[in-house]
Amino acid sequence: MPRAVTLIRSASLSDAAEYAYAATAPAESRLIFLAGACPLNEDGSTAAIGDFAGQAARAVENMRTALTDSGASLRDVISTRVLVASRRQEDLVTAWEVVRDAFGEHDVPSTLMGVTVLGYDGQLVEIEAVAAVLDS
View 1 (spheres, rainbow, N blue to C red):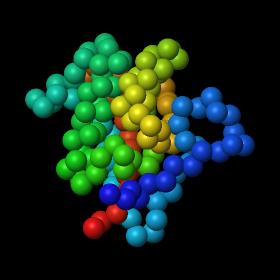
View 2 (view 1 turned 120 degrees about the vertical axis):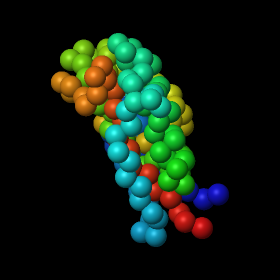
View 3 (view 1 turned 60 degrees about the vertical axis):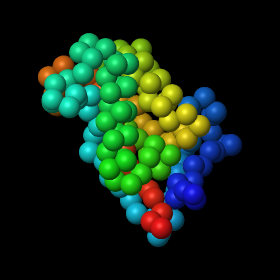
């Protein structure tokens, strides 16, 4: 099945980044704007308290569910922003590695940000995403 998202890698920029530098979708694609995927369990409690990797994994799982309910998958994501409530770079990297691994070769343009606080008690990670699909 053809995909709407085309990832763009720039030979003019460093290859140290673990993601494409840009992405496009054709005008006829349907864009899906996801709310920030939070590490919440079905009962509304925060998963994996104190665990950056565990919260990132739960947030990815919840993002997958929202994408599926929208008729999309991780392969349809065109960009992400990963928010991590920490001042420590290693905590950001821990969360990022979980997100990066979930996307595999579909290394969408991404921004990784340290923030002071997130919305739920004990929340350390949130993932924002935009997807694009071709309706058949």
